[in-house]
Image 1 (spheres, rainbow, N blue to C red):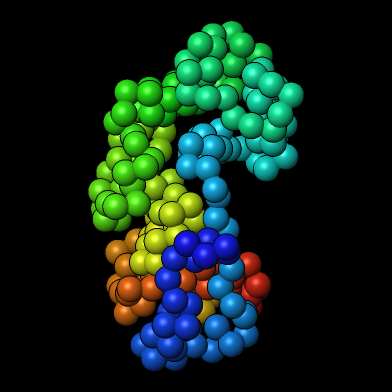
Image 2: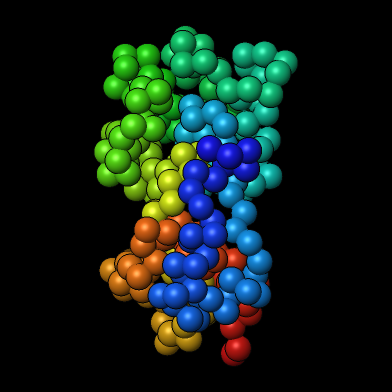
Length: 213
C-alpha cells in the first residue's frame, strides 16, 4: 500500500475506465483524481461502522466520545477484552443502544476467538473477506464493501446496495429512475477490475450534480 492507501495503479484505472465508458471519462476530467479514505486500524474501522449506524454524524460523534471515555482519556476504541468486560448499564449510560452493544460484543468475540483474524485478510479474495466480515452481527454486505474499499484498498468493489452510488448513476447517465442493485451491477460491469474507482466517481456526481426539476 502506498502512503495514500492505494494498492493499485491509478494510471491503469483511469486508462481502463476512459476506454470502456466515455461518459465516465468525461466525469473523471471534471471531478479530478480519485481520493481514497484509508483507515489504518481494521478493528476501529468496524467498531465505528457499528457505532455510527442509523445516526447523524454529530450525534454519533457525541456517543463515540462518551463511549471511548469509559476506557481512557485517549481517543481510541476499547480493546476487545475491555469491551467484553463492560456491562450493558455502562454502555447504555454512554448512549450505546442494547442492539449495538450486542453487535460490538459479537465483533469482539470474533476477534478474541480467532474467527476474524485481520492478519489473514490480505491474503484472501474479496468474496472470502466479505463472508468473514458479514459473519459478525450488525455488519452486512454494505459494511463489508466499505471495509474492502477504504480499509483494504481493494480495487474492484461495486457496492450496489449503496443508494448514493445508484443515485450517481441515475444522474450521470440520465436514467429515468434510480437503478435497482441488479441494474447498477450491469452498469458498473465494464469498469472491472477497477469498479472501486468507478464507484467513487458515482458518489462524486451524486454530491455535485443537482437534478433539474
